[in-house]
Length: 456
Image (tube, rainbow, N blue to C red; front, top):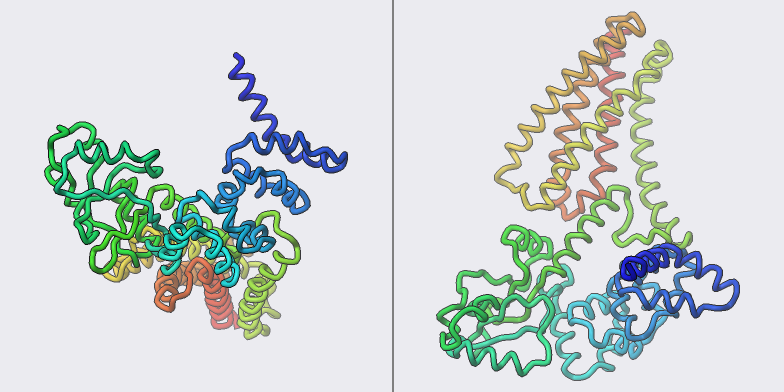
């Protein structure tokens, strides 16, 4: 009963933390807020920071105990990390990140200007500095940028009993350790020694007799998205990272892969709205407004292009008012059909399913789906318009235009991501804007063009 009551109180405190903090700021007493905040785990503290408005966020940060600050910082989004890091010098950053895993330290340092990074490195111990520098040389979106250099290695020609004695000399082993890495005297990767086999096999057995040599290590330059797909396909918990000569450089663990998966999903979702990765929900107006203004400007240009297409048929619109009423329907149906295909193809690319060898089949499939849906809704809308306006010519016009636009939208939704990726442009960021322009222009031109042909 006491445990349940404590859990309920803790949950209530979490929910009311910002309210209590507001009252504490007004009254000048922050002790209760400090106690509540530091009672939480680092991920929960980071959540409170990210959900707090800017005027509370910096007060919350100052209330965090120094021993928790580094662990909290690594849990924050990029925008908020930068917000706090910009107020620190190199020695403060080094002190904050002491005790964190190398890959987490690197993630934080990559948010800083070069001069501050140099100062932070100089403030670290020689061992920590060498480890961090070795990872900093790799792009952050590769296996090298993700890896942790803290690994436990053993030789193949020793007994399992010797391995166990070796492990007992360590005060602790790295988190998420499910395997030991077997290397030769030149540190070249040979295989894995699963902890399960180490504990269940005879102590007199040799490492080479029980180790797993079938595992394929991850190359240091493999992209983080490919690493995530590899972990998903093979159900990995950790994996070795090697260079061109098969030297063991470090390891990647499932917690780092989960971060990549969440970041990629977050980036794709934000990109659909023209927003940058790590966008702060409660960010300042001065930072948020310019970012959104860029894509609003791009959208305005595309809208003007669509309006220009309409203006070419001004004479036809003047004669038939019904065209102006029905025109948005054609563009809207094409936009939805195109978005469905675009989303599917971008998702397939993210999962590594869309390749050069199957694009032709995918294009044929989406063309067929678009044509069938186009014909279906062309017939439905044609019947609706004939009853609405009593004009079979108008019904034929909107039916044909809708079939053309839905089919074109399916083709565009398939080809656009492929072409954009070939040009090294993020399909999630630019695809929706370009697709909307295409479906609007094709819809308006086909609808008004047919109207000009059949009604004048």
